[in-house]
Amino acid sequence: MQTAPAIEITGLRKKYVNKRGTFRRTKVENVALAGIDLAIRPGELFGLLGPNGAGKTTTTKILTTLLLPDSGQARVLGLDVVKQTSAVRSRIGFVFGGDRGLYWRLSGLNNLRYFAELYRIPPDVSKRRIGELLERLGLAGREHDKVEVYSRGMKQRLHLARGLLNDPEVLFLDEPTIGLDPVGARELRVLVRELADAGKTIFLTTHYMFEADSICDRIAVIKKGAIVAEGTPSSIKRVVENQGVVEFEVVGMPADRLAGLRGLAGVSSVTVVDQELAQVVTVHCTRPAEVMTQLGVILEGLTLRKVSSREPTLEDAYVQLIGEST
Amino acid sequence: MISLVRAAFSAFAVSMRLRVISPWAYLNWLLFPTIFTAIGLFVLSRPGATTTQLAYGVLGGGLIGYWGVAYLDGGNGIQDERWNGTLEQIFAVPTPLWVIVLGKACGSLLFGILSFLPTVAFAYFGFHALLPGVDAARLAISIGVLSFTFLTISITLTPLFALWRWAFSMLNGFELGVYVLCGFMFPVTVLAPWAQVISGSLSPTWATRAIYAATTNEGPHDFALWWLAAILISLAYLVGALFLYQMVERRARVSGELALA
Image 1 (cartoon, rainbow over the protein chains, first blue to last red):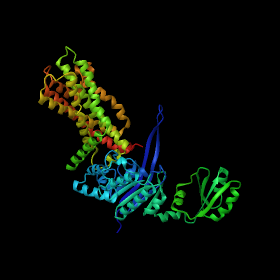
Image 2: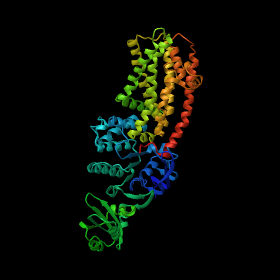
Image 3: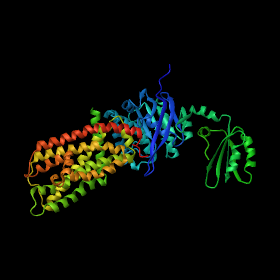
Image 4: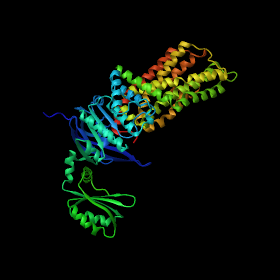
């Protein structure tokens, strides 16, 4: 028997209208979502990947009832996020990344107590649950400190505790590890995975590939408001299955040499990242050995260093899907 | 229903906690009203002044402070929520926004009413000025009615601040206008006839008139009429607020303007 999706999105569209100019005001439309479809199973940890401005946060805000779509449908736990707002709000939790979203001049405990009341949780339940969450998220003993003295990692864990106050069936995490140090980010990922293992449906947005690769059951890649790939991390990697990756550092990469590199047979994308004194060039191709031998010719006269060839990762698949950047 | 009352009380408690530690709050209820009282009494308590003028000097600063905190803190509170990034959070909880605003507005009223303490004390110790003829019961009821008018205005206007960042800046001038139009420091009868029409449409005008009548023996004393006028106009504001909250709920979700970015 097939279970109903925990989250179901059909033909979702959203555009923002901004005004430009001081005296002669003109309206500018930005398409945030160009008609996306998604279905997420109960208990699944689903990752939505995409670059900044791709539509990840807009999708999350529509699903958490903070935004209305222009057209299309979105249902969470079978409830329409446009019409059944109140019912949706009481059954979901959400955590947005970053420092803000907490009362810094109140203690962590008072933040949680306040939101527990706003979620209309009975006092006996909220007292027990707050205690459990503080313990589980490693904030016990620091709950009476003002949030302004918390580290970034502690603030993010407090955010997560707030998002879990109503014991939500679906949890939305919008770039929850952004700005966290590697240890804090890893701890948070472990917690998120544990929550999914405990049966919660989790909708995670991120632009960290390894994060999605390490914890998500399934992912979708969004680009300019459209889903360009969807599947398990390993199935997404298959986009670059027959490919290899050649990476090298070069000092000063003229545009004509770059074009020459792109023109080589079997090269599907070339990305260049500027560093202090050199550029790191990543070439996705079907015949890495041939590309390696051609490098000497194409880059003749340039200072070339650290040439290597490796197997493609999810990040490579992502770059392939999102497109080249120079 | 009980959970909504608890949510409103919790919003009230949080707003009080945040005010107690905010230096701005002390300026609004302590310093500014005292300055207004000093200026008012300096002008109004000269030899030959009527008892009514003396009452305006004693209570005017407190009324200005009370209104300033009730109105400005309501607006600032929403702006603070926006800067904290908590405006979206409180918008997306199962508790309706008006319940949270009600709790916060009650916090503003409680803090604002404290303005009468330093101003009345300053009038007594600084100028040896006392209210000429206090009718304690009617004064208490009139202050209660005035509080209700402030509460309804605060509840009505706050959603506008939530939706439009510029609304608070635009409506800042409204604070000063109400000082004059509602007769906090002098009777509205000295205003131009067209201004008195506007005064009559503002609910605090009628409650303020009742307050001054309850502290002097001069002039008419139509308390029941004034209280009724203040309450009915306030109820009309609340009817407007019903539509405003529905509009704000929808517009905020269309434009996504609750977030700072």
